[in-house]
Structure formats: structure tokens, C-alpha cells
Image 1 (cartoon, rainbow, N blue to C red):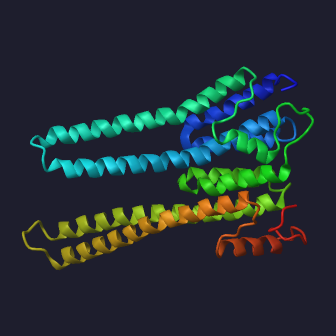
Image 2 (cartoon, helix red, strand yellow):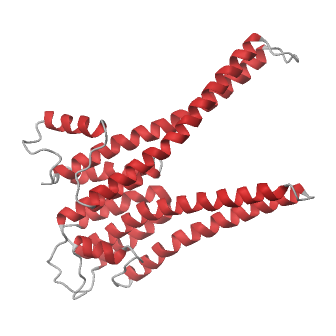
Image 3 (cartoon, rainbow, N blue to C red):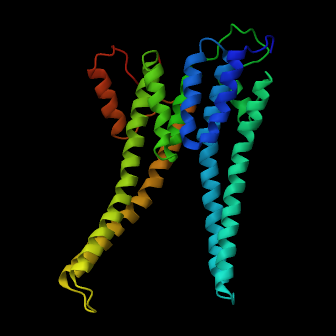
Length: 309
């Protein structure tokens, strides 16, 4: 860079990647830092956009890799149990292996943000592997250009919006991205406001669906235990116990359906993020039209929310 980052710039550039240590909750800080510094420092804006991308995309990849590894190791362990004489020792080994794997993957996930924070503390221009240079080209960031030159505003907005779409897989905390972007930058960009609101509504629906399924499971278990208690502990199942059992199994089936549907919503969110990065003005089925209609009714202007202002 032609100029050395100021102390304020370094602080923001250090805090943005370190927010990954807070896991899903850390999504808030990069959006706030980008919104605060986007018109002041392209260096900080770029580092915040990188940190946001790492948490949204990196956390998603981390979750998927963890699930795949745990699934295959579990299947292999179950298949091998039949030939194991000491089942207790084998199960303990599986638990230890999974625990070690989890902490190892967490360590890998935390390593890059810590390296990024150290580099930024020294005033260096850090680029995440694979993502950093691509993002720099996308938003027009060049560390050797004049400090007064700004990033490409349209691409900045699209990056933030797309990370909000990608974050749907981060249950509950993923809503921080579209919510914060809407609150801090919604007045400036009608496109960003529309995308943030529809993403927030979409993620809220997915979250409610998931936790609704969990609630049904515990509610069914409670009903089953309650009806079994009414049977008096006899060896034969009473009519009340049968009703409780039926309710429990119905709730279990609903939960299984929800667990099968939720990943489909996650895929839709990933597709939405990809489409936005490619330049499309993506609308979620039903939700997108309702949000667009609501914005138009709110007299936000004659410009359609689907077009980037």
C-alpha cells in the first residue's frame, strides 16, 4: 500500500477476522466494520468483506466437512463393531476420535483468522487463500492504488447480500448479516434493502421450521410420558397410552419430514447467493414477491426494488 494504515484502520482490520472466533455470532462485526468504514478506508472495507466471506463460506464448508467426516467414520465404526470383542472400548475409541476430530477442525477454522489478524496488526495487506484475490478483483481493490479510490459499490453490496444468503446454513446467527445490512445500509441502497429483508424473512422461516420440529419432538415425548403415567405402570398398554404413542410417532414423522426439508432450504439459500454474485436480482419464491410488494406500498419511490440503484 502507498500509505500505512492508521491505528483506527488497524483496529478494525484486526477485529474483523478475529470475530470468527465467536463462531456464528461473529458475523455481526464485519458487517458493522464495512458499513462504518466503506466510505473512509478501502483497506478496512476489503478486510471486513474478506472476514464476512470467510465466516459465511468458511463456516458453511466447515460444517459440511465435519458432517461428512463424522458420518463416514460413524458408518465405518458401526460396520466394524460386529467383529469387536470389547464393545465398550471400541465405543470409547469412537468418542475420543470424534472429539479429537472436532477440536482439530475447529483449530483449522480458527487458524486463518488469527493469521489475518496478526498480519493486519502489522499493517500488511492480507489475502485469504483462494478467496482473497478473487474478492479483490470482484470489488476492485488494489493496495497499490490511491487511497482516495473507492471500491466498486455495486459489487460491495452484492457481496454482503450474497453472504447473507449463504449464511442461511448458520442457524439463527445467520440472520445477523441481512438484519445488520438492512439497518445500517438499507437507506442508501434499495437493492440491498430488498435483498436483506427477503433474506431475513427466508432465514426466519427456516429457523422457525427447524426449531418447530424440535419442539414437536419434545412435545410428543412429554405427551407419551404423560399418557404412560396414566396407565399406572401396568404391563398392558392402556387406551391413553396408545393415544400418546400414536401422537409421539406422528410428531416424530413430522420432525423427520422437517429434517429432510430444511437442507433443501439451505440449498436454495446457497443458490440465491450464487445468483446475486453473478449479477442477478434474485427473488425467493413467494417471499420475494411479498417483500417487493410491501416495499412498493411503503412509498419508497418509483424505482423497483429489484433494480440496483
